Length: 267
Image (cartoon, rainbow, N blue to C red):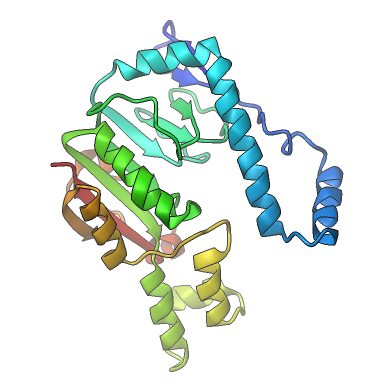
């Protein structure tokens, strides 16, 4: 990670080229490796999980030995009223600390913090005023989200700090599955499924695309409450009373229709 104190608005950044050994391989060799895994009896899901664990181990090692990373996180730990964008992917937000485990494309005026989010985050208690996360938590095991991620969010948020979470809405897909039996599905759902059966869609949202779990509001409300959050509310897409969250939801009609948005406050 690098700090750019002489360039206002640049802040934290790490290498932009992927450090993952797998990502550096030619596409032809990656295809051969996938075929080899299949011949050995491992499906792509198992291979992906093993590859991810190797990447995270290398990331932790890189962070542990990097002087630049230590200096940058030390500086970051002294800052207050941070805005955190958890699981940012390539959607870097100016004015926010964008957090992910793989380096996205650098965007001028943005800050990036790379880390294995399953471990303790290098941020001070009560150092953030807001955290936004959209379509990220479903990519982690449910137990990891419940027992670690939400507790880290609460630890880092200052009293009165806000969190807004967006995840695929499992309830929506169950409703559409039942509606498909009556021939009364949402038109956006019909456009998105491209001829797939509703059962395939239901399974994909729970376990496809690197997903581990499909949430509904009842489940999200319960685990947020257990983590110590209050004023937990289900929100409509692109609708919020919190100024810093306005305009952050991805403006894709299909994605908005199938996303569960929840906001809460750290007491």
